[in-house]
Image (tube, rainbow, N blue to C red; front, side, top):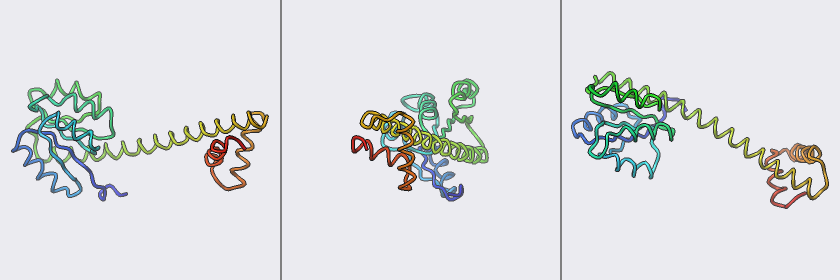
Length: 195
C-alpha cells in the first residue's frame, strides 16, 4: 500500500481542551488519521487494552501522571510511534529519559510547522516498524515450520525405524510429489501419528 493511501489511528492523551482542539484540527487536515482522545494516563491505558494505535501523542503533564512511563512503555513494547510534548523547561531532562526508547519529544509551545513535521516522523517510524513486524512474522513462521518438520521426523524415526536423514528425505520427497510445502506434510504426519 502506498504511504499516502494508508490510514493511521492516533490516540491523543491530553487534558488541555485548547491544545486538544488545535491538535485535532491539525490532524483532521491530514485526512488519513482516525483520532481518539483520552484525558488521563489511566484512561489511555484502558483504551490501549481495547485496541492498538499507530501513533500515540501525549501532552504532558496529565492529571494522574506525567505520561513519561506510558510513552516509554508503549514505544518499547508495541509497534506504535510515540510523540511526547513537554514544557520547554523540562525538555532536556525528559528527552534524556525517553530517547533510548525511541520516543519523539517536542518542547511546548511548538510551531505548527514543527508539529506537522513530527507527524511525518511518526509516519516514517510506523512504516519502518510495520516492515520489522512483517519480517519478524516471517521468521516466526519459518521457525514454526522447522519445529513441525522436526516433530514429524521424530514420528517417522520412531514408527518406521528410519534415520533422521531418511525421515527428512521422506518428508521432502512427499512435499515435492504433492507440490505442497514441507509444513503441510509435517502437519499431516503429526495428525496421523506417523506415515
